[in-house]
Image 1 (cartoon, helix red, strand yellow):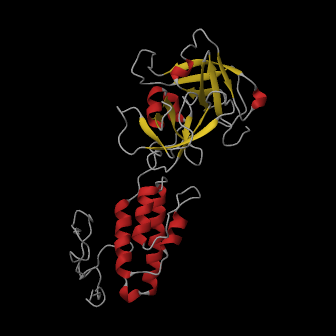
Image 2: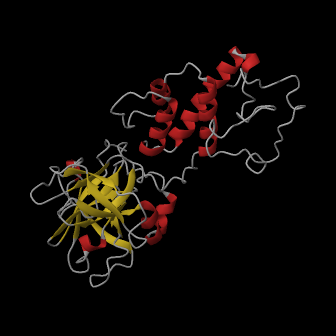
Image 3: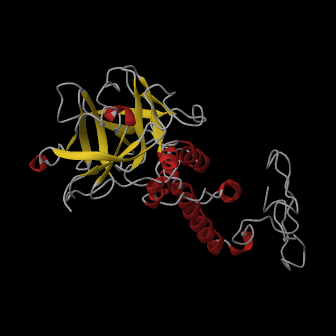
Length: 334
């Protein structure tokens, strides 16, 4: 297998229609059904700008969604099979739902007279899918490349080049639509075998508990260093340094597309608090789970709107005999 991050992007021609597509196995590609609408009478030709030596390859439609030229545009997907295998590394898919929190999405299309392709940067609009089918895209800038003819069928990718969807609507404006991978999988069952399993959601309750504990004991922890340790190289960078752990945590929750980053942030904060506990054994605020200790009074002004109930911590009782000899004096926990 050969090829860099753009090797699997393909230019597809069928009669007068030109669009994009992307290689998903040694022989199979995905594109929009409307790009190859004339495949019954016109040949389908595929080329890879990153592999000019392969030349023009022929392909045929082997599977498709329910889209028809006179329909409502649902199921606008086809699977193409090349006449022979190619030694090009295929696309890698992101987990379902990864597009929602991504600060930037990239599409590789082939507008008129740009046979080598051009990039367009968009973002996914938060909210539900339109008609349970499409995700709305909005351009990141007013002056960049828009989704025009030649982008239909283009893979929409994260910064790490993993695929989150496919462009299906090219209006020439700063608004477009894509089929997210989870919808694409409805129309081609084989896609399920190529997609990673959905990532489990972060444990938001755990992070909130750790943040409250940190706000109470105030450990020596730089929120900017903790953020850097929790995210990867493609994570967004804040405009200004963080001034508190909570500010850094909220940024991770709202801006970082990698859902695992929230758990890594919590893991890092847990280690900081564990070290603080080891250094302050007489002032330790409770065991690893940061649950409240016996004798400690949680006032409304200290934890506004929060109540520690039995069903919140199932199986846990905060009794004096659980922490023998421990008293939560007012001067210890002001």
